[in-house]
Length: 338
Image 1 (cartoon, rainbow, N blue to C red):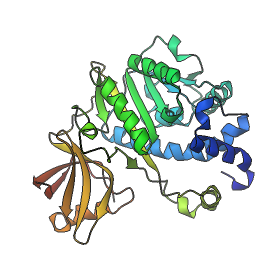
Image 2 (cartoon, rainbow, N blue to C red):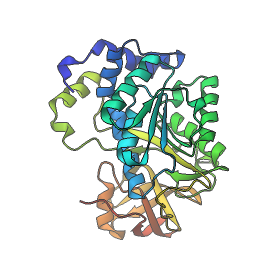
Image 3 (cartoon, rainbow, N blue to C red):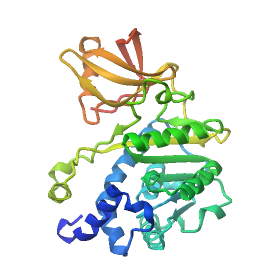
Image 4 (cartoon, rainbow, N blue to C red):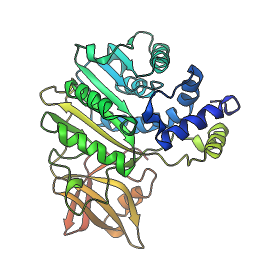
């Protein structure tokens, strides 16, 4: 990214539309340059969120069966490219970049062809797709009119698997929960949920909580003068990458490389821990529902230190508990290096 070459008029217009809700009123891409500027900046930040989701899927050895990817509402195509690149181009034959904007379809398809010259890239209406497919949706849920939402959900019900990433707001997270619950009878929940039961966020008393996480920016981003200047000019915190997500797989459509099941009793921390003098308070999700748990520092000083990282912790754990107090910690997945 060359900060001096960015079209700030276009970027400001796009951001104002996303924040103010104008994006829901129709196509907002005016030129291919709009998409190029977006792809290098705000789109790249969305890519960092997807990187975090996809890293967990790789760690859990999840590979979708379908060899066609449909990037629905593709925009610049950042989501589809990240998914193919992370899960392995050898696992896919076709990437279909679809958007209601012809400009976006053309830009996303061209970018995908440059990134993956051997991949078949299309921009056809996804309703005409007969092959099994992995549906990718990113940052679209708050832009959909009721007919567009119905169209997307109808397409999603035909998918073999779904990777859906949204901003980490209370509203967008809760909207994904509604998708999860509507699809739970026919789809296995791969992530983020450590269980297949009803979402604990829907229980009385859990209304203030929401399922959100934080992705790290790439290493060295704070030493990149262009990104630092971009953050200052755009008025955003480069460290803040909250997101919500949902990964589903149709029951009976098992992954091509079998994903090991999570150990019984697995929990996931949602949001950020709150730190006190000698303990941290965690918002915990497991099959029993949502609960706030206290982790004394003395229970596991090394693990407590991982909570202070940014992002604060590896995602999945098993606890030994006495009521709402954690007494011992066992990671459900291997800890990352470092």
